[in-house]
Image 1 (cartoon, one colour):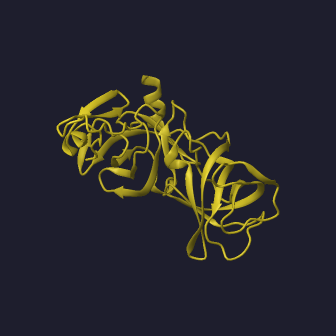
Image 2 (cartoon, one colour):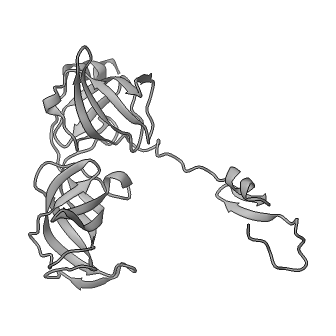
Image 3 (cartoon, one colour):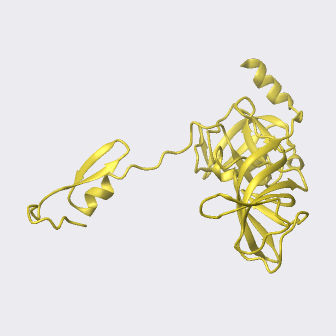
Length: 262
């Protein structure tokens, strides 16, 4: 532990640790560790749960599996699957083969949905609350991209694969908007013809297939990505803004009944 070198301060003096809730006086490392405030989970945000896999279990039905990133999921909730999945009711939620009344951010869960085929869902889909900011398909999005290791030059039209949450989809660099300074964020060049390793730029990107992403500021887990090409990560990025498509999702019978009850 760091101690003051002031001769007026004795060896047994206590020091102050600043925290969000105020200052705390401490003397030992154990006291500091015991009084660290744990980070708050984003339970107050709308539900976002990217699917890692979907199973068909005999006697139960369709069970999507994934990690809760924000919000809560619980039995009886009517959820929507983006980008183009159905709207249906959650019948049960399980973690480690134990039924849960609700699952919070950080929980890896499986949840049973009714009247939905395994063919209607797949890895990369995002589960959200149909009544509270439901997730939607992205028409295009603006992202800040840092080129890490690319042997050549990247121009408009480049279409690598993006790994964003559990989705793995090719996206086109439709427009190189500006080249910016990596540290300050200031614009260096408008509409650059190309960028190379070490450059940072703002890019308008268009997914080649239906894809659900969010801005990093709203949902950080769904707003960062890696650019994969030539079996390596050539760039990384964060999403600044998303243009979403308005599409009518198919609502199952169980979801309609659940919505009528409420």
